[in-house]
Length: 247
Length: 85
Image (cartoon, rainbow over all chains, first blue to last red; front, side, top):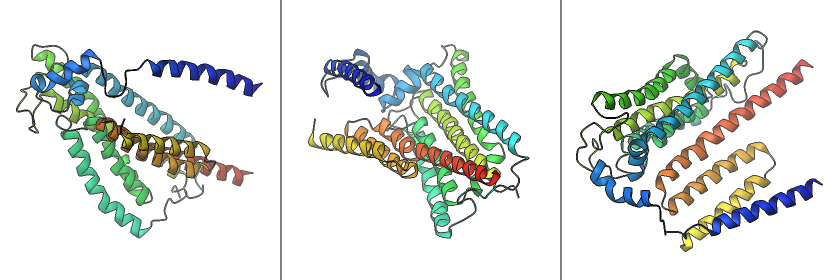
């Protein structure tokens, strides 16, 4: 019975997929008017050489704000959920087992981690700040920055990241990023234009400080994403390590 | 479509199948990371470097790390339950 249901469903799905894919323009023959127009006008209009970043943080800046707040809301939700559980469990888990790999600190791994983190952070900052020039931007660079914390976490047995997560620095980073985006949007209104208008001087195309608010918005998104992902990971680690190191 | 693109597509299909056929969760996580990396190469050869960058970090670092942390937590709980009985 189950197999028959699957076969029927799979046949229908395959038919719809094949029909849909057959209707697509062949590879390299894009016909979207918006895309082709933006491809031609972006460098002149916004002085940004990466059209994708210009679309994300300028032409469709409002959509990106929504995306940013999806991440913000989900990370806040996760933190609320995990911290609630932890406070419930704290009493009865005093003498739990050590988390696997929790305190076993391999000196070689720790060394690699410590030396590897700096280049990752530099790369992350580079990707965040060069979004308007080359592929990259706040989202990509932000996750790279957060992955520096993950590296630290994997190689140091979880001790370093836990102290980072404990002082509220990640929460502050995330809030600064989310609030900064809205603040730049409101600044557009104050400048006499619309919400999220590109009101800053555009500079020379190809220079680091160019493209007006595209660069600033990309940077605040970088802060937000780095804070959010790092916070999520730090909370998960705390969750696992809590019962083990409470002795 | 160039030969390179066709070759990468085949590698993506192969590694995706490998992920689906692996039974041990820990191995599956490592393979998922590898699959994420291959997918990033696919995006890159199809001229989407922006997406490729996100895919590298999300697919091969963030997602596997998250699943590994969850697995650790599940194992810890299982050990705790065993001790309790």
